[in-house]
Amino acid sequence: MRMIVLNSHPMKIFFASLFILVSLFASAQIHALTETGDEVILYNDGTWAYISDSLNLPTEIPVNTTLFERDKKSTFLVKSKKVNVGVWLDPKKWSFTRETEEGAAEFKLERKGEDLYAMMITEKVEIALEDLKSIALQNARSAAPDISLINEEFRTVNGNQVLMMQMEGSIKGMHFTYFGYYFSAEGTTVQFLTYTVSDLFEQYYNDMEQLINGFVAINE
Image (cartoon, rainbow, N blue to C red):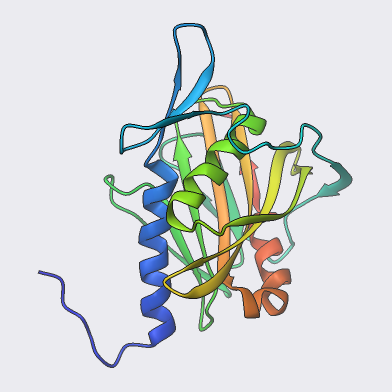
């Protein structure tokens, strides 16, 4: 039985609920192929949609030519146990926990003393970044129907090509912003997301970008 602590910080309760919802929509749909080779998303209610045209997504994603690197203060490396990736973080700013095997996210991170959170979702499968974008948006809309893509671009982060996406939407009457990287390589797909309420996004932007710029692929 789960206990509810009445004197808990209301923002902490909201973000705990938001983490659960996002973990669910991150893994709730299945990426599949039809008999004719078309890529589709299968939903839990038995419906499906073509990835290529379900969101009428633009075909061109801009490329940021800046080379992004981890911050010098990000000195602690957290390694995935599922795939060969990790994140360098500033241990004075961030704490992290590993989630249970049943959860969608492998890591949950929290900015110490602040209402800023992050998660890393890792899977042993390769998905083209353009398709991963479609899946992420479809999944997000199953939890937040008003979700919108605010910004996107390809970036090079510590030598790895990633897709950056910033999304905004409402869950349980609160407006939130996601800012993160999507990465895929042979046998690996990663969604590394930071999130907070939209009113705090500008205040936390530097901390969010510093964290996600710690993302690395580990060559073993």
